[in-house]
Image: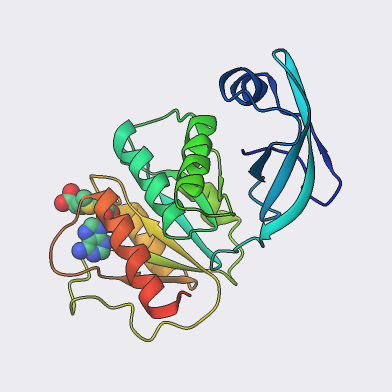
Length: 232
Ligand code: SAM
């Protein structure tokens, strides 16, 4: 059960209407029954039903089963593409342990609107499915130029650039420290964006190999290569 409430011993939990319906009407949980609860921040906990009726019920947090598993300090910046592929990127980035997911609008990005709540729900589902106790935050869509203008340079950006054809990959020898991976849209970055990225001191261009990958494939490849070099 995912709840947006703090989890600590003795904490009372009040499931929302849909959750209460599922727990008490569908699953027919009764006082004394136990379930696992998590909120994406405090790890996984056992919670025991204290009251149950068809109209609702309550639980109390008993004990922790797993501490929160923090992901590496890695962010993913990507230009949203078609809906299903954007969902795929959010899901895979969550599984691969990205700590924050930031959709960015670029010169060649097609989607101007993005349902942040839907993507956040995807991240939650992906975290639940892979037994993760941490749910990455999915930010609202924002222009890449605005994000770069206020960027904290202590977090370096790994700019995945298909024009840097090099060895199989060139993530070897990257410095440790916080990083953000940047993936462009299907049409790539515009010449103006490329010039700007190339001039920024906190941006490191990398190749993911000699073939041009689709943006969703590139996101998974970059996350895997980063994990292999610097992840845990
Ligand atoms: N500009 C290209 C074109 O239209 O021919 C294609 C862009 S590619 C489909 C989408 C994004 O994936 C790129 O902006 C880049 O961030 C990433 N990407 C794809 N293949 C890559 C590679 N071999 N190395 C680095 N990044 C790659």
